[in-house]
Length: 108
Length: 296
Ligand code: SF4
Ligand code: SF4
Ligand code: FES
Image (tube, rainbow over all chains, first blue to last red; front, side, top):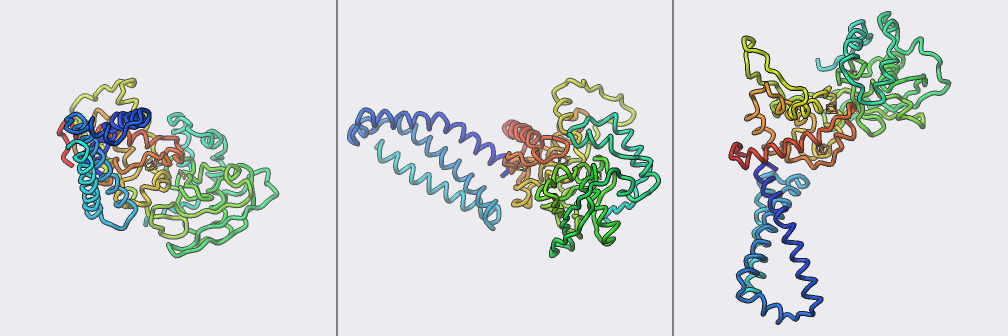
């Protein structure tokens, strides 16, 4: 890992600390209030705030996990740094696509 | 020839010990007992190291030593147990009294030169300052070459990759002045000086390098000692090589490969903390990168 990847991984980790906390609080709230799927969608549909919040979350997770997977592969598999980097990137893109799909499904 | 097989210690070692005694603070309980133990007169007379040690303990040690190169095996020897015996004394006994073809490396025998490190009962240690009483309560010793370095023969490893990484980490002082310039004044209590002080007593023994899992699985990793050295120079206000040094330690295989699991700190015989030095490098390089001073 070089300094660029290090800074991105640490920065996305720092960003995820409040995002995860709020996300967990939302889950508690939704279950305590017995919100149905329809209730939740009624709140999220068309909401720029929820779209931006979870969009940022997905971006941070994708970058953070991609770098982590790249590092694990580079250290623990016979793959070269370059190949590990490519696989990590691919993993990040898949996460981003799945996450974006989920976010779009609740805000559109 | 990379091996320094010094058969008898001489007055130089004693004088070295006495001159360094005042300068180097004991960092370990092994140091304390060590200063009282070395018998200079005996060494100067070039007598075998094992003679004149009183009282002799009645028991024997069962000592397994690595013999051969990479493809070697452990062979077991019986060595008399003595008072205040060090692991290096044990190895020396085998070479002097049982098998003179045994290869190992040492020089100062007083914890200064860093050449005597070996794997002792599974842990990397400086053998000249490791008392048998501390590591072989059961009377059994297994002594092998340092891990993470190529074995030359028996207990001697090739330290070239270790020092090559010091070079890669820009571990050499880069002068910023000439002899015509005034000597810069460094305040002893300045933060940079204190940071350098905390890391500067390294004796290049390679113990931390052998103890580091990241070195084992990442051939490009510079390792704790080289990075610790880079940190001392980064905190040396007289040094002019920090741009290149930060660049070197911020690259792949540099400080960011460290997992901070502190095995280096745990094993360092001088109780240095390379993990803290590496954490300092991580902060310094990240800051330089954010300021646009580093191009990874
Ligand atoms: S803290 Fe870093 S240098 Fe020290 S043993 Fe762990 S990985 Fe190696
Ligand atoms: S940091 Fe400690 S263990 Fe590592 S080479 Fe220096 S003295 Fe030896
Ligand atoms: S022989 Fe010099 S440090 Fe052990």
